[in-house]
Image (cartoon, rainbow, N blue to C red; front, side, top):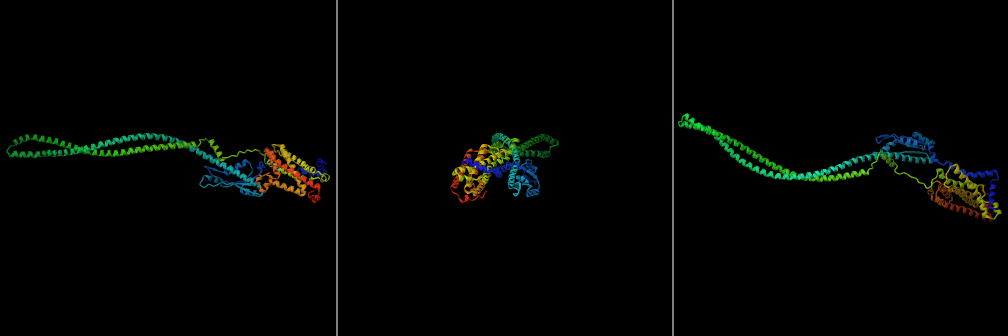
Length: 603
């Protein structure tokens, strides 16, 4: 009997009765239904988050932020509701807790009463963080709680961007105002430098003038001293003259004062001499001109004395004034010397001040250059960039169409194993009739492997049709994807065949155990690197992980060299399974064991 005949005989057995046919069809569709339904249910769950009921509690009482009354909590709530990521329900905290308890809400987000106040505190001397509270109930759905945590993190980022953007705009506006003031200050400093340069020139001229003045005052002081000395000598001379004049004036006055008495004495003497009154009058008349002349001389003398007195007083006044002038000029000379030193210090100070003003001007100009001159639109753009300074630009060598397409390689690989495992519930691993009639272990083994491999191929073709047509998944290499499915199913058939040949019903059970091991080690959901060390080691040995990797490469358009390595590993498993089964069949053709004579526990 040839291999095709043995395969045909087994297929006829499987469809020999209506119930057998129903059983075969049912088992053929098991992997299709399993993978199809699971991937259909999880094709794109993130697109349906808007149907997830979430409680939103807004208790924010508002606060004064940048001189404006704000209620950031309500602003955030309005944005969340408008975004529509979830099915938001604005409720009280009691309603939220009740909804979490009875399952009406998957999770609840609470914006507390001091939310805006906390944001306003950032510019105070007692800042504290604003909080967004997440209420969850894992008894409803653990993943919903996880999604809630991610949602709150996203809300936190959005609020942070909003706050930083507004604060950044205020800061940038302030910097712009500072720049305007710095420009004015730089202009003023530049004008100050020019003024101080002019002042320095004036101070130099003033210093030169003061030096000239000091020299002149010194000369005046010398002359005034000489004048004072001469005036003093003159005053001494006029004092002597005044004394003599006073004596002459006194003598002249005495003479005039003595004239009446002398006239009386002459009259008496003439009378005594016996002269007559006429004679006496004649004599007196002769003497009267002398008296008159004496009076005239006295008048002149007294006038001269008065003039000499005035001259003396003037000489003394001149001497005193000359002395005071000399003293004043001496003080002026000292002051002019100090003034020369002061103007020199003034000149040095102005020069230092000019240097400082120049440094100030340069510093202000440099400060102006350091602050960009931006318009309002630019500052708004800068504030937006400041609120989110780092953006994520995702580049992907390959990309799954959606969440379901991302899981498809794993569940397709798992469905292939389930399909083969289910087929071996009704497919006979080895025809005992053939073993008895033939002595060709290789042909028997190949026929025992080819039958489930062909039926598994039908399963994979049906599964591929569901993925491509019903679920609409896209394939970068559809032929390669189908080929991987067929190759994987044939590999699984060889492994389960070997287990059945050697261990019978125990081997069939081990096939289930092996499926469970591969379910957790294939790395179909989380990266295999997250597995415990013993399970991670199994990932590198068991075949399903290689099926998943190969499926990802051909489905998403990845690295075909990795597919080659994956196929080599699967080929080793396939060949190893067939060889191991052939060795078992060879043993069975030569002798029977007690297990061969006992009926199988599985029908």
